[in-house]
Length: 211
Image (cartoon, rainbow, N blue to C red):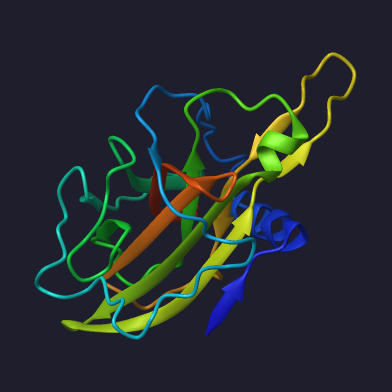
């Protein structure tokens, strides 16, 4: 199944993820890193080709191309398990231009895969926010077998200033909820203004337990 996240869908998914125990931990979208200029990507979503399978033996789960995280559950609060690329040079032999995070120890629990753009400076305008674009594919593993969970893509969503609160940019796109998997891999790409590849974060968010 392919899922293209609109602003409404992103807000809906975010509300789902915060339904148990308050808001997700927010991380500043500012960071310092080198950026890599590549050819035009185009305004539409990037759909992985049939050969884009970030689940082969040649998939690297170590920086700068990927990482591994291990899930655990806390009481009430939603928790994120993710990896963030060191820079913008990530790529993979079997899934070109993707940073891959595998989240293990999910134990079949409900998880929301996601991809997030990490720009090199704090976003302060709507134009710069809307210029951020992310795309990702996800896979789930059960009893040693990987299954495709679809793709997600979308642009940054700007929240205008209100009162004394400055405007803010949400550059994270969620997949629909998944359960029944021992591990989930998310391979993602983030760009700014279509031509500049930037750092990316991939992973899952899980709801907290009722203790």
